[in-house]
Image (tube, rainbow, N blue to C red):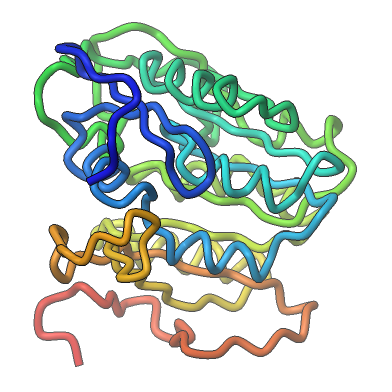
Amino acid sequence: MLENILNNEKFNRVVKARDGYLLYNKNDIYIGKSIEEYGEFSYHETALFEQICKEGDVVIEIGANIGAHTLSLSKLVKQKGVILAFEPQRVVFQTLCANLALNSITNVHTFQMALSNEEGYVAIPEIDYSKQGNFGGISVDKFKVGTPVKKEKLDSFKDKISRLKLIKIDVEGMEKEVIEGSKEIIQKFKPFLYIENDRQENSKELIQLVKSLGYRLYWHLPTLFNKNNFAKNENNIFKNIVSVNMLCIHKDFNINVEKMTEITDSSFHPMAKGKK
């Protein structure tokens, strides 16, 4: 475990992590706990982004949470690049902004909003961040009561960017709606797509939608634990837990993908019981 720079009775802590200083919630059972124990979160995803993103690239991160990946993406694209980071939860969004400020990052533009296939508002419920929870696992489209937060299509930003390398989507079941609201941008720039797909009930439609946009899809199942973690902590508190994501590459690009399984059957999900 890393030494906390900020250590009080409240829920927030600060550590020196792989990509800089990170403010995190000690009660978050995945992101916060990983940062506390290892000084990083899901590094194997970052390692993939290192193969995709270069200096000067533009990246859109939808569901940025507290910025654990935002910091690494910012370093990859450098000052000539730009990150657009979206996060709807107010307290989580404030932590994201704090992490950018702590590290003097100026190439990231943040937006406290949800992205979907229509404009309007989503209700963000009152969340007690002083108690244990998976704060990155909250589906913000499931609530009828709460603080209204703006909801927009990503396509409303299409005239604000001139290039785009990657769209990263981690929105807890709203992936299909985000893609539907991003079709114009996707068709214009044909970026890499990195999409969480851990909700089996939504998987088939999501896969078919992305395929219809001219993409080849590959399963990416990174473990949460990285044995070469920043803190050099050999204790694997996450055991065999993996993230279930898809790397999507437009068919116009002839890119050889190794060590990933191409998605040819939209009905198949790697976490399904009785899978072959």
